[in-house]
Length: 411
Image (cartoon, rainbow, N blue to C red; front, side, top):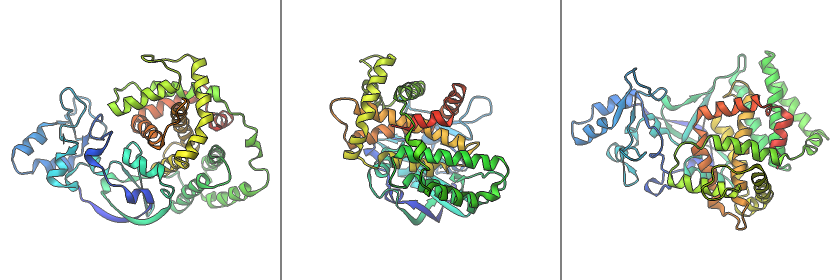
């Protein structure tokens, strides 16, 4: 089996509180996904005692043979139970592999989820994917979820994500950039959309600096940007940005619809139906005409701030912070500006879904708000192809200019 380690890391508090809820999970990660198995784990399973469990375990796997399509990087993967999308090792909501051999017997995929452990230079950080319902509750509802502490992570080198830096950028400077981005989003005194707009300006200027081959100047750039941010009038132009509610509704609803083609679980289906109704769809409708969509979205997005204040004041801010930390923002896409655009796409879609839940007469409670974000993450966060297509669509339609993006951010 792959070797595990315990290493010191910088962690948001909510990560230290996470424990899998097992058979009490309403949207188990053991259903609906192709669950891959790495070569070391597969070889370890082959060495198990030759009993019925070993035969059943190995018989439930499809092994890559180089001829038929295989998931990227997988040596093998589980064949779902006939007539369902469940992992064949799931029984009564619990994993029989883990019950038999403990956490160390799991494949890299199952051992790590929902954790993303990221290394940058000598630093180690960990965040959780909010596609996990319990992770979403802990991250989005606790006021202190994003207080950072030192702690140990139990991990495997094979599951770490190593951040690849632009040429000439040193790890210490890159870590300072990452912390600066987190601080911009956490800063108080301005609406979240303004903080995101400032983050966009920062990424635009950082991209220009890096593309000019001036990576060694990043520390001085950070100091100059921080000084400019503190100067009077820096944010004045942002206050003049109009809220493009009609465009927000149509742009993000079209992206949402394009990514909901896979069959949902019952839990996901219930949330998706609630979102569709909130955006003006009648029962059985898959499309909503533009006038109904825009009216429903405007109603919901205007009510969203009051609902969040009452039920989950930090929900959207914590969602953004988690994305920054989990993805090693802004260094996981071609440029910081491209990474920021990916963030705007996801933020706009999440806000659209939350607004849909708020557009009716009865405001949603905290649980409904959290499950909406969780289902979005479950359906879209792990889909690399969707992210690529959304980025290409924004560029092709001219939606990716900074002036447009600011209008999409303003509520």
